[in-house]
Length: 138
Image 1 (cartoon, rainbow, N blue to C red):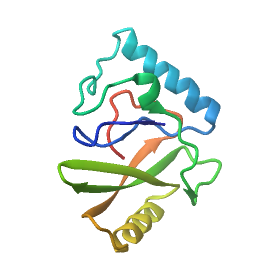
Image 2 (tube, one colour; image 1 turned 30 degrees about the vertical axis):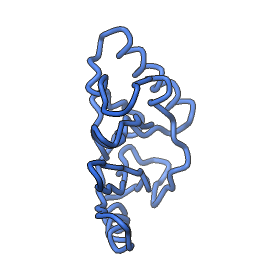
Image 3 (cartoon, rainbow, N blue to C red; image 1 turned 180 degrees about the vertical axis):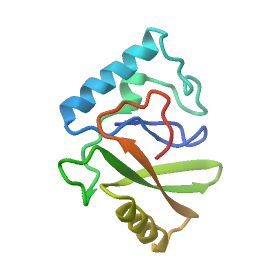
Image 4 (spheres, rainbow, N blue to C red; image 1 turned 90 degrees about the vertical axis):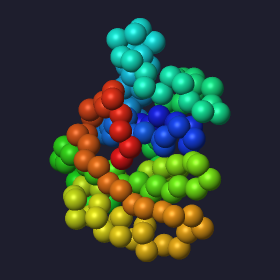
């Protein structure tokens, strides 16, 4: 699940990795409810060149490739590419890996690709099924 952020403010944020679309959809509703009720402050309430809409900006993503993820895994690594140009930072989530070794290989493959703009690869550990209400980039 991710939160779209204006690239002029920050980059898209990973809010969590879930075992099913249904679980992610439930977590999405919980996240939106926490912010709308005031139980959670929204660090991205104001963004440059973007009208914030939680219902549009928080989305379930089910198309990210899985690498070496066993069904019994409780922790995963989310790999993302980050490029910066013209005052914008763009993050794309490119893989979910079951091991740090697999995530590290994915980052190396990303960084070996040619790009029109400076690009770096990053990975971050996530607990499967846990909502990160204070999201950070992957």
